[in-house]
Amino acid sequence: MVVNCEQVWREISDYVDGNVDAALRSSMDEHFRTCTRCASVLAGTKNVVALYGDERMLELPAGFGRRLEKRLAKKAAVKGSGWSSWSAWLVPVAAMVLIVGTLLTTSSSRIPLKSQHAEQAKDIPPDMVVVVSSGAKLFHVPGCEFIHDKASERTLTAKEAMREGYVPCPRCLRQYLKTGLTHEGGKQGVRGAGSEADEDGKSEVLSVAGQ
Amino acid sequence: MEGLDNRRDEESEYAPRDFADWREIPSEALERKEVRQRLAEALGTLDRKYREVFMLRDMEHLNIQETAEALGITVASVKTRLLRARLMLRDLLAAGWEQGWFSRLPFEKGTKPW
Image 1 (cartoon, helix red, strand yellow):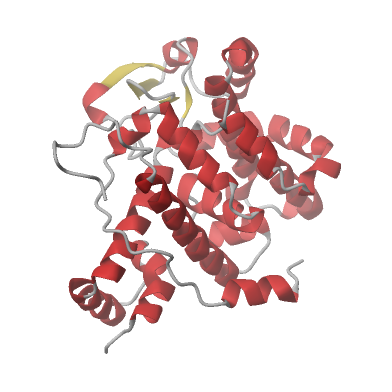
Image 2 (cartoon, one colour):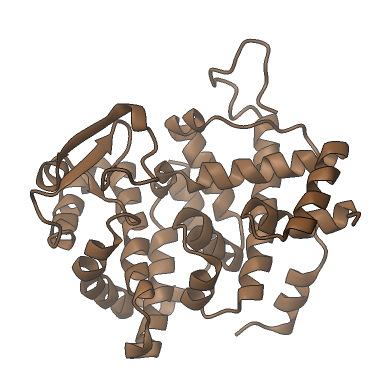
């Protein structure tokens, strides 16, 4: 099978995710070896996935998370009890993007945010052994694949980590966030899911980011 | 509700805007707040339908099915929007490299990240 550039661009996202079958993968591999343009598109796409997938990008300016949270909360309200278990933590995770973002964007909001999160993470056993790494804001279960700098890992208890201002990793500590955050996040989201929920808000994002 | 216009737009062919010679951008780039802000700004220029799919899939690391259910859209729509979002961000970032966002990064002497 021979693929052309247009076909490669159409499949490149699935290729990066490993979601193309073996025959297509090998055709695309062959194409990348000979087509510098498509090799460039592939490298750039991989960069995008790697950079934005880093936990440090959860430190986004407030705005993204808030709107996403509202939209998800609105869906939760519509669907009611039909929401499956994994989606219940989406609202809190979106909220965390917002919380972490705000935490790092404005120092003045540090105290209320930390206390808010302390409440949300209350179901995590205080003596649970967790790890943190320098330069990051999350604490993880040891071995979590989302620890970004394993060389600077430090082991401590969940209570100590929270006291130092770390917040739970939404991936490896998902189970605790679900019970600890769902009610609060959902309630806030539904209450706010009115007129603002559908605004696009680009200017807000840009103005925050540009400060 | 996805209007016909949206669907047409999503299904239209995408062609990358440039073919700059990209290399791997080291994750240390993210240590710089300016870089994170630029990335956030680029994300902010995407239409919401693309931005939301991208955030849930590539930042929150949900899988395709979970992203589809969370947003109430089809798996096919998630895949199409994700592809578009990734390629649009790639284009935006490529322009950024050329404007020197990463000029102070500690790359090896004489080696550029693109």
